[in-house]
Image (cartoon, rainbow, N blue to C red; front, side, top):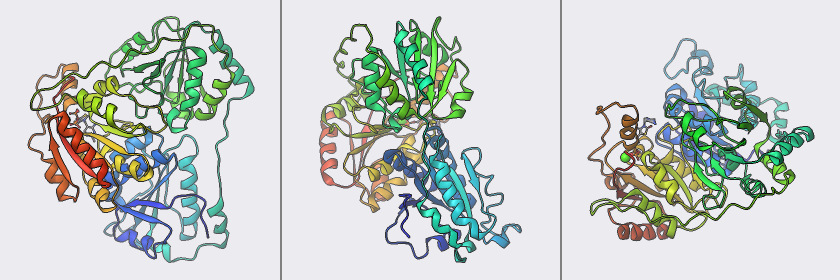
Length: 520
Ligand code: TZD
Ligand code: CA
C-alpha cells in the first residue's frame, strides 16, 4: 500500500533487535547507515530541518538510544520532527532483563522527546508508529520515540490498519480576525517598533513575509539570541545582527523601542548570565510562537500561540505602511582582519566564502568561538534554509547535520564550518558522506583549542582550567581513514584552490584550515 507520509529515508544503526524490522527492506525506501548513533540522530536532524519535514530514525535498544540522546537536546530546541524507533528484545524476555532488553523503554528518552511509547501488543504497532509520525509533526514539532519488541514484526497487522498509511493531520492556527486586528493596531500605532526573528520563521518559510513586514514598518530586525537558523537576509537595510544571549545586553540593545515583536523564537534563549532588566523602559513585548510551552515559560509580557508562518503572512499583509523614512542602506562589510603566516583569521575564511561561494550555498556551523566573525562577515539568508547551528548548543550536530542537509538538498552546495573540537563528536558521519557519495564540503577550523570555553573562562573569571586544549589532531589522516579525500591549508590562496577542487570533485571533501584563536 502506498504511504503518503513521505518518510522513505531511514537513518539508523542496527543491532539484533532491529534486524527483523529491516528484513525484506522495501525497494522504495533507502537506509542511511551511520556508524554511531550521535551521528545518526544529527544527520536525521539536518535532513528533517532541510526538508521542512520529518525524518525517520532506527536505533539499537537502550545503548543506541543513549548514544543519540545528546543530539536530541538540539532536536527539541529546533522543533525537529524526528520519528525515532528502537528495537526491543522479544516481548516475553524484557521483564527478566535478557541481554539488550530496553528496560522501561518509553521512560528512557524523556524529557527529550515530546511523546514516547511501547505498544501494549503487536497489533497496535502500526497505529503507534502512525501516532508517532503525526505527533512529531503537529505543533509544537519535536522528536518522538517508539520501542518495538522484535517478535512483533512476525505478527499479522490488523485489517483496519489500512487507514493509517493515508491519514493526514494538519495544523490550522492562523490568527483570528480579532487577534490580527489587535496586533495590527499595536504595530501601526507604535512609534519605534522592532522585530526579533527566530528559527521558526525560517523553518516555516516565512522569510519573505518577514521582509515585507519589516519594510512596511520601516523597522529594524534582530535575530533572536542563540541563532540556530537565519530567518532574515543579513544585508537587508533593516538587519541589525544577532542579539547577544545575556539578559542585560538584550534589553540594552532594544532600548528606545516601544514595541518589540518576537516571532518564532523563545523569549529568549539566553546563555551567559548577565543579570538586568528583561525589557528596556517603556517597551511592550509581543511574542508569536507555535509552541505553547515556549509561550508559557517566557518570564515577561504577552504571547500569541499560532502558526508562525501563517501569522507572519497575515501581519505582513495587514499592517499599514508606516509614515517613517525608510532605513538607510547598510555600510559595506569591512575587510576581514588578517591572521599570521601560519594561520588565517576566521574572518578571512568567512570573507573568502562570501566572495566565492554560490549564492544559494547552505552553511552548517559548529565552530563556537567564531560567532561574531561569522555574522560580521557573511551575506546570508536571502533564501530559506541557508544556515544551521546546534539549537541547544549540543556539540556533535554540525558535522553529521551537514551530511543530512546535503542529502536533503542535492542541488545546493552545503559547506560545514566545524571546529577542531566539535568535529570529534560526530566525526563518523564523514564515512557516511563517503559511502553514499554525498558531496558536502567540511571545513575544519583548527585552532588547537576549545576556543569558546577559553572565552567563557574569562567571562566566569575561572582562570586556567584543565581540559581546554585539543592539540595533535590530524583531520587529514582521520578523513582519509574514513574514505574522504582531505587536505590541510594555512593561507587564503591555499583555501581558495582547495575549495574549488572540492566543489568540482562531486564527492565529499574535508579541508583542515589552520586558524587563529580569536574572541578570547
Ligand atoms: N560537549 C557537548 C556535547 N556540547 C558542548 N557544548 C560542550 C561539550 C562544551 N563546549 C561548548 O559549549 S563550546 C566547546 C565545548 C567543548 C568548544 C568547541 O570547540 P571547537 O570550536 O574547536 O569546536 P572553537 O571555535 O574553538 O570554540
Ligand atoms: Ca577549536
